[in-house]
Length: 375
Ligand code: GMT
Image (tube, rainbow, N blue to C red; front, side, top):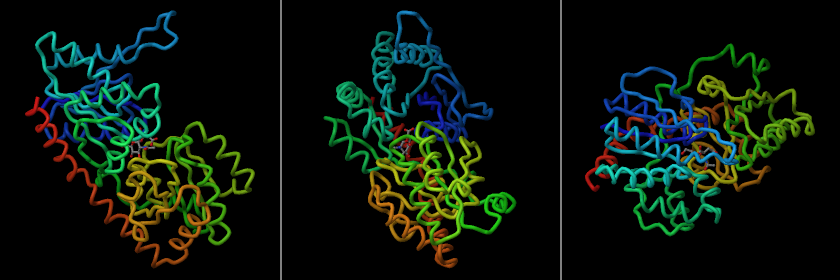
């Protein structure tokens, strides 16, 4: 197939899923065209089947807000016509699903029909999409897509609760490439971080409010009262400065390292003993899956799609949002005993294997065919 993929090119979850899916489709013989405003973060190698088309937005003094959606739709019309694409897959509804609708309308004037699949990722529904200023457009453009997928059953239910959706939504979970995400022997790095053989905790995110990064620090401080440990904070975003300040206020700075954005996240995960994800809302929790694939158990909140990934008491624990004490006591339970830690680690890896790329890729391929046959 010749497939167009639209996504945010950033390190964020939806961009990562879209890019990894595109790479895997290309490796499976499909021709994949990424259409976005800059080179996707993980599109970092050459493949004969991979193409990247940049959406350029011209600046004009009249525009306080440059109309990206229009520039994207124009680019899509151009790429679909000239590359003769069979299907367009847009990741994250806003504004990609409505740009796709506009594209379909324009292409119909050329006698071209392009099937569109929209994948809902999370905040496009749970935060931004629900906002009354976007809701009618999001509802309309989801209903106009030829296929709609959601990354968890919970996100599907949330979408049906908050929007008047007439289309069937197919649940296709996030996936993981275990050839990349696996435990790597990195003893030298471990010794550098934890010279006294302390346990290593880790959090990776975009440091947005929804991630509750201050809870990570508060839980860490409580764990430290019982267990010698270090904390790695990976990523960057608006709440990083608050998290750093909180470390100072709580006097834990010497044991917390802020590493910023990192490419080789699997290397860092390989030295970790526990991953923390106390999010306010999380439609799937791809970062937690990446940790589990590197044999790292997860203490997370029990919201959104997290219970569909993290098995309470087996691969980690699921606690109420903001319940610092319970998260700390569950983390201590996992970390205080070597044998118990080993069994949580092994269960985390076993669970991650259920989301292996090779299992999910054919599901997407079959779904594409189903949508193409329908149109
Ligand atoms: O996690 C983020 O804030 C980024 C966001 C995105 O769309 O880029 O991630 C969402 O999509 C990921 C991939 O499907 C999911 O694994 C994340 O759980 C989801 N984030 C939230 O729901 C907060």
